[in-house]
Length: 315
Image (cartoon, rainbow, N blue to C red):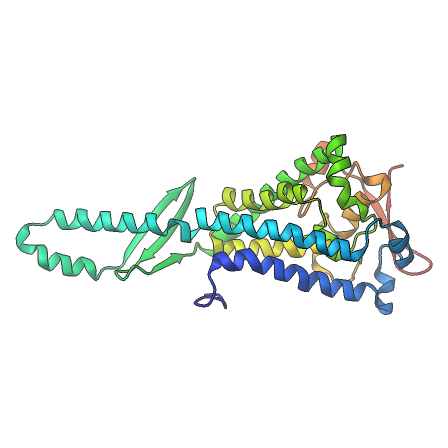
């Protein structure tokens, strides 16, 4: 049972909840970033942000909104095609077929009695689709209820989705740096924010947003086999983590920064000149950087004027 059940479909929540959460979470960080008490937690000074960044905040907001528009369109198509809404017709065909088989297996004398009993049944249909088992209960009035997997199964799907997203984003991200044309015309837009901040987490060229984030999310959903309801929580979690990695603050009680080695300071290195060919991994783990030799370690130092500095350990 979730708060939106009976009011909004899981597919609608999976499409729009991450977008709303992005602006709430990133907007909160943006307000905190320029508060005087929070200056002692910044990874870059405000002067550095104003001097080094090559794009103004209004342009960043417009760029993020454009990416989220594309993201919403793709998500709706994905859910309608593969989610419970798109499969409802298939479920009903299977139920009707099952009813017919049951009725035909009885003699004519018991047909009427059986028909009344079949119509009162609640059918459970299990469909295997691309390795994913979906359990769907369909009642005689054609209403459909998707039975969610156990918490153990959903946790496993969460982990699989995280690994799939990390793998996809690492290799696409790295290739966009190695291919001069792609970097110059597409990925360099994101690196106009040399000093990252939360609202700019999804500031990308529209094509990069589609290839890196939107398709990466779609693949995570498909490969993990999660239901649209589980996807709501996964996509919201991924949004929170992505925003946090770009927030520009090193906060003492930030759970993301303490649980994940791939965190705000780790990704800040990648935005620095010395680190553009390192620390490609995002948004969860640093596995591929470590395996393929693109990991750059750093020291987190306190600045005399207040705040922190993530300093690369390579020249």
